Length: 140
Image (cartoon, rainbow, N blue to C red; front, side, top):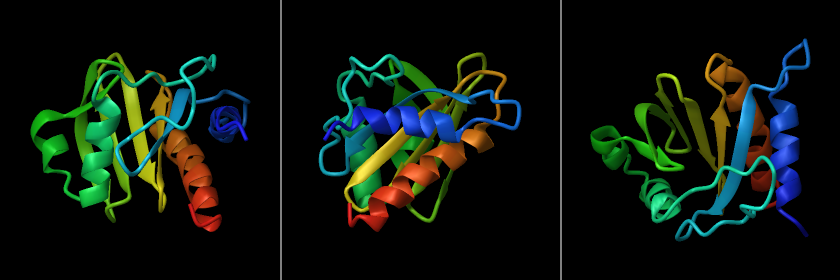
């Protein structure tokens, strides 16, 4: 089973009434350690660098987001300003002129999407939630 198809599905879920996708990149990583489930070879892959995946997974696993509050959320080498966390499962961050990041955890995975600058993060939140909740319904 290829996890990369979930990237296409997530991005499709972020489309508005006019058909504009609000997310341009996405990935799925494991909750234990942050290992990638999707490949960097996908055309719309969010390519986490170095320890970014592990750092994100560590915060979600412990449900302690103080590292994000203090130092921001890093994705693709860009530091996004932490906005808020909800229920220990969802984190929102943004960076002016770079867009926003939506991160949501299921039981065993973390779904991450990037919102294009000028687009609505709420649409990306919806796409991420659809995938995370689907994985959760499978017990993952």
